[in-house]
Length: 103
Image (cartoon, rainbow, N blue to C red; front, top):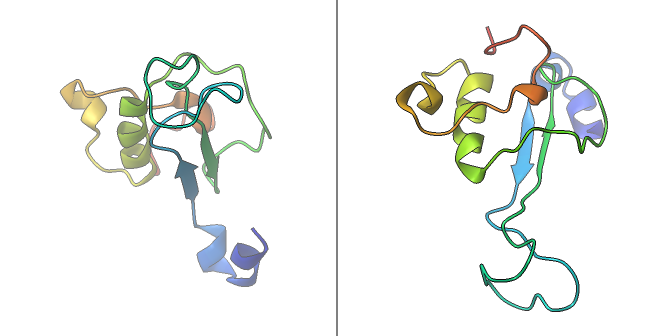
């Protein structure tokens, strides 16, 4: 985040999103991709930027799926959302209340 601060206005208007393509599961039993490992379906997502509330680590999210990441990213960039085509839903907690897009 220090690098963004050094970039001035450009950095202030940058949103960073980091996520994973699959979960890891819990404990030492996880050694490869395997949907049968408990917890392997759980992924994490980090979003940081001017449109996101600075809440720190949040565990109280509603239930979301990987398919919800795309409409969320589209919402950050004010693009037509896949959500409107029935493909996932925007992760509302990543936005300030009342902010439905990056507009």
